[in-house]
Image (cartoon, rainbow, N blue to C red; front, side, top):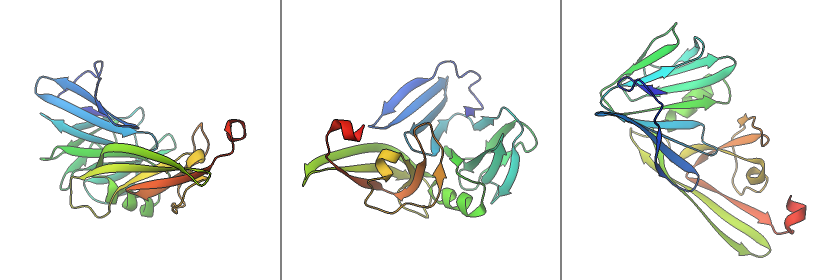
Length: 214
């Protein structure tokens, strides 16, 4: 993920953070690119000034679906990605390893998709411009359980078709969730991650001592 006005990403700094999200920044003169990402988030949310979005792939992506000029699904080496330009923008670069987005707005996002179906790409498009700007977890112990609320603070940069965001939960979370999840999953070194949607989620973990939990 890059910027048309920033040639080198060698100097990428921490701009801000919340409990499980960070925002990195690259700057060159008037050109800036801020990229927000976090644990369990399939999205990288981006804001920029002084130029346009630029994506560089290791191999030429295969376009599996184009919902509009601004929303494109591509596959690279078996991994599926959603490219979400601002409303009214245009992705250019098909057949090459470099994509550029033509837009008069300052936001875009990229997501790792769990599959390449039209249903999944359309669902991700509904949340693509709901940028996560803060995260917070609060907990309490009651009735022999550790009850934790995980909340997302979201800024909608377009006419949002959905509230909240998409998030993938780790096994130690989805095993104790109160709310339902989608049937979409990701593989990870920590085990299968299950995708949810909304403004947050709550877990209730029975207190059984440290060794049984490990």
